[in-house]
Length: 410
Image (cartoon, rainbow, N blue to C red; front, top):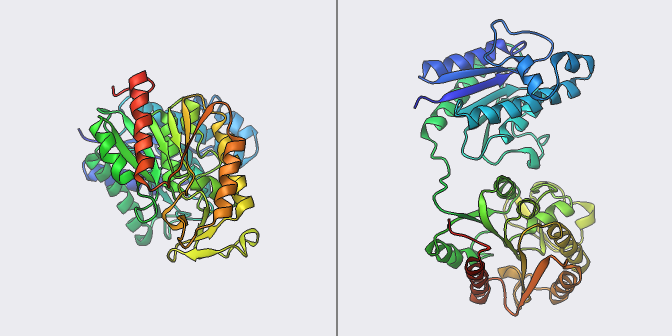
């Protein structure tokens, strides 16, 4: 099948640039569907999807967007409409990828449009603010690709053509090559960090696969948590093993390494059975090249690399993390188990380890017990999270769920 790429942007002001990308895709043998998200002006040639259709998809109109006399309000109307139309076009099989071009306004819209498409659909954004800290992690779709629109704020030139042509070729190539996620086996989502600090996935993944499941392990460093939550919100998981909740603490204490305020909520909202645990609950990860926030100064810290540093939380902060986790789980609609290994939550905090803090661990365990809501079943385990007993207990729970029909393999 020849892929069709949705080319979206403000065709009234970016006609030449969008048209150039359209022509590159066509020259490479692809097909194009154009979408105009402008408000005030009109393109030199009609787009396949007009700005009026976009505004109507948002339950509004171009007249209403203009009457608002506020560019932010107007663009949010167009963002809502473009996102709804893109999702509809993909569901109907009419597009296999999308590319959006813009400055700050167009990028704001592009994030909504791309977020409306499922993981596995190629999503490219050509932006003057690509990779900027203006882009909040919670708004960045899991598999979005971005390229800086260098030297292209106004008009075509050889500098910006290098970016535009790369992006046009990339989205078409991705649409041709992508292997979308299969749905032939029920999927279990798991959160973790690398094997040096958390090891349960080494034994759990093959054991779960032997039971007929596919297992996806997400690196809980902000964007990994966003992907995990996005798939949970789609209902992609048969069950989740959310064993690395550190992103909850990151967000609570203001780290930029955040999966956003909705971390640890999507599975519960969908009624997906979940087992939650404490992997690296005692650490807050920070951007390594940012200065240490004042409220975290004085705590032990460790530079993991030039990108990431970790701060070890004290007992009071760990109690806050425990309450935040339980507050989120209190809203869960499905079977929810909190598996609490009382000997620690990462390889470094073992008795005798470099980050061992018996008082801090005891405070966290105590707060988990106190804050556990009625809808959450608390299972305590006299073991460390990296001990075989932890993985064995998790498998026992999965087996019980399969026997009782809570979790199905088809």
